[in-house]
Image 1 (cartoon, one colour):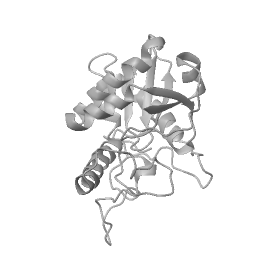
Image 2 (tube, rainbow, N blue to C red; image 1 turned 60 degrees about the vertical axis):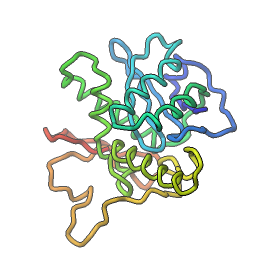
Image 3 (tube, helix red, strand yellow; image 1 turned 90 degrees about the vertical axis):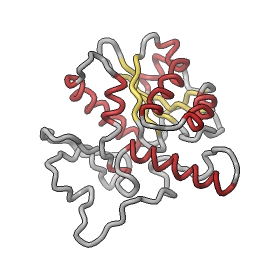
Image 4 (tube, rainbow, N blue to C red; image 1 turned 45 degrees about the horizontal axis):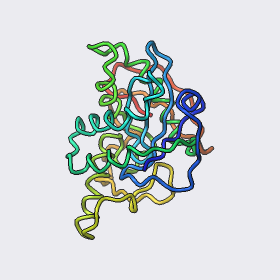
Length: 236
């Protein structure tokens, strides 16, 4: 079972929240979702654990949740995740419960991904190639991941590798027991980059990139953004 936490505009189009008391039983945990008012309209799902983005057509909205598992499976395969991980994940994702958003950090990243998607849309070689857009924006450095693995694609790989280690030691099937969403106090993921004197960090990267959506001391608030340089990556 997976909980999909939608913005108001998402829930208005897809369904009413049930606010379940139980937690997601999938490996990746909750997903957050919103709507992009393109023509045609697009739904954006963002994973609470890894910040992985998944773009897909919104219409028909009545079947969006039914289509989400297959779309997610395609995205995970494109990221190189093995079928032995994907199959049970998709099996549990087939049962969904809608709820309201509950994590300002994830919502802030999701809003900035919407802005980046608007900007990167013109780069699509195939019109409305949402798979390409999902994979491209998964490489975006996100400030909530700076103390972990920096970008959603790397966080996804680290999450799968970590759970593999846990399961191989315990002999139990995949579970969410050792994982926490972005913004949680406990951060079990161990970053594979150990800072040493003089080594670059996400804030002193010499590449000419623009920092977008840096966190302020107030939880869930984000400062503004400046014009993006023609660099390969932007930062959230």
